Length: 486
Image (tube, rainbow, N blue to C red; front, side, top):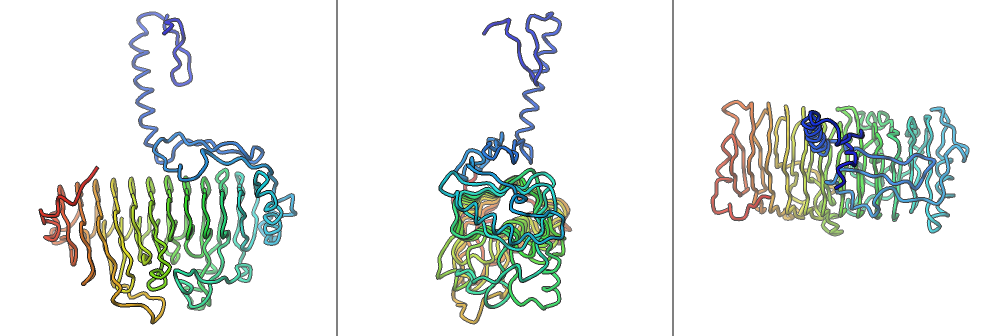
């Protein structure tokens, strides 16, 4: 190395030929720079550079080496041949004018570039009211800084579509369901991103229909993509979804990252992100407040899910934080009839919530839950930090089979700290079902009254380094060989 070359530290040039009395200072600064880099690599929200609307093909580069965003088939944002603004199609961003037909017309026009390098629709600063519209393949929806898409308050602009085959009916009502605000079916290479723009479903109208028991069809999601692959949703704020917020169903290679998702804490069923019968899904670096699960992994409902048999597998949920007073940070089920396996949940931070992690199933569900790894959970004021639940008695119709019980095997939970919890873990299996290899290591639940002990039924497994003392079903030394931790 040339001793006369300057050393660059934190963007400044330092000359090694400086006085020897400065060398200890240089060493200290170098050590400090390395230390800062180490801390920055563990940030909840990694540094990123997002393309602006005038450069539709610029890459979105994350410097976090732990990202699972490689599930999306591009290193960064894919380059699009054509970029146009919704204003060029006659859109009006005054917060009053309906742009439903404008968005639909714009996407139809851009569909023609799907095999000619793709297209990008830019939404500039403004308040853009719209009903439901469909996306297309090889397409980017880009919300500029200050851009807000507002969901129409006219239910007719959320048309009724067929129920999902794995549900057999609308989730809330018999028959069809309202389409999502932003929808897509059978697509590939789809990006929804921007400069922290906002999509606001204005869901209060829909919540009131639910509260008043006047809802005729199941509410629509904010974003739903079906039968699609190679999807990226990033760097936006989603507000006030009528129902589940982001719902990829029958999809593969899905990345949802750097998102803020908010709904009032009493807004019914406003789940944050619900991967459903989907594979290769990466959810990371998201902040969520909602009236239901922050993240819920699903795979179909009772006999319909069993028949369709579309599992959810290879799913990573990491560095998610938030609160939900009625539900859990991450839920598995309860709609899990197609099977759920190979799920990794790590670096989860949950507070003021009903549960940290919850595995939900019931008689009639069938299916399986297998190979679930949960680690590095931090919880504060969470009522039940870890919960297995049953008995919701929630079925699509009279055709469900009470003999169809789930099989649960290989739930590995480690490195958990819960402060000021109300209850110890509650692990309720199902009589006649197999709940085995339920394994805990290095789990600490603090703030419990002495009378609050673990509650376990119809499960078996092993626990090590757990406080307070676990239930007898987890003190079976014969199960320890089945429980391995990285």
